[in-house]
Length: 159
Image 1 (cartoon, rainbow, N blue to C red):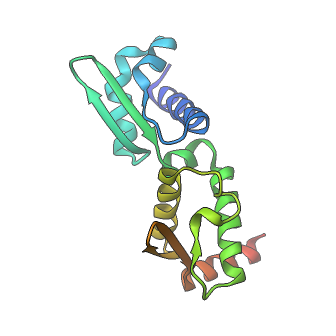
Image 2: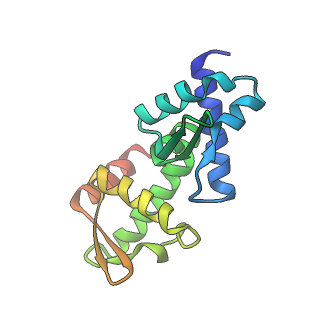
Image 3: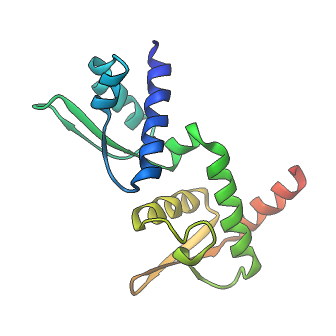
């Protein structure tokens, strides 16, 4: 199996694990061992980190293990339609009241997400420039930006 195939299979495995138990780090060495590629754990783990696919990772050199958690960029590699759909839902809901800040945890599609998943998704939307965010007490409030409205408008013409 070539490195690209191993990387893609590992990302898919991390994505499934994230869906099962959100917010955890997973030992990719154990997964790679199950497909006969344990010797690749450092190389694959570091490659995923370098490409920006991991929210966090930790190398246990003494145990020869590599633990990691996938982020939105990694998810886009294995489930782009899910990230795209969720983005469309959230931005369209924000567009219903574009001048209002909304609690991110109350938005459709996000109400069952963990805090770490909400932060990760918010970070993605912020990085794209589609939302602005502020913290009030224990809530993360988001609002659609002009760039977010333009993105939605441009997407309407494509669809």
